[in-house]
Image (cartoon, rainbow, N blue to C red; front, side, top):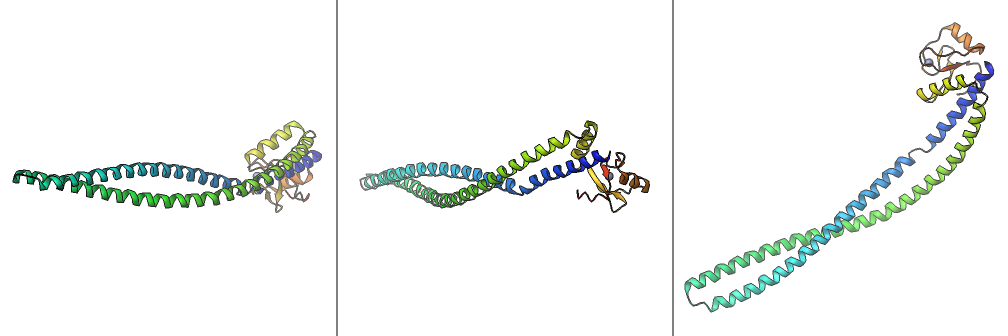
Length: 240
Ligand SMILES: [Zn+2]
C-alpha cells in the first residue's frame, strides 16, 4: 500500500497545481465582466439620450413653427382691433388677442424648458463619449492581459493533465475513485497528512494514537472517520 499512497501524494500535488492555476487568474475575470457590463450600460444610456435628443429637436421645430404662427395671428388681430366698429366686436377681438398672447407665452416657456433639456443632454452625451474612450482603453488592456494569462494557463493545464493521466494509470481504480470523490466533496483535498502528531490535517478531528501509528506504518489505507479523507504519515514531509 505504501507505493500507492506515495502515488496518491503525487496526485494530490498535481491537483493542487490545477487549483493554483485557477487562483492565479485572480480578479481578472470579475474585473473584465464589470467593465463589459459598464460598456453595455453606457451604450444603453447613449442610445436613450440620442432618442430623447431627437424627440427634443422635433418638439423644438414644432414649437418654433407654432411661435411664428401665433405671432402672425397676433399681428393680424392687432390690425383687426383698429378696424372694429362696435364695442362688442372690440371686446371679442381683445379676448382673442389675450388668448393668443397666453398661448404664445406658454409656447415660449415650453421652448425654454426643451432647450434646457437639450443642453443638459448634449453635455451628458459629451461625458458619455469621454467615458467610452477611457472604457475602451481599459477593456483593451484587460482583454490583452486576460488572453495572455489564459494562453499561459492553457499550456500549464495541458501539461498537468498529461502528468495526471500518467500517474492515474498506476493507481488502482477503487483507490483513485475514493480519492477523487473525497477531493471533489472536500475542498479539493483527498489526501491529508496527520496534523501536529494528533489530528486529521483536513478536518482537524483528533485521532487516536493507535490510528496515528497505523497511518505512519503506511501498510494500509487509513481514512479519517469524520471527513473520509485519506490519511498519510506526517513523517513523510509531503508538503501538501
Ligand atoms: Zn478528517
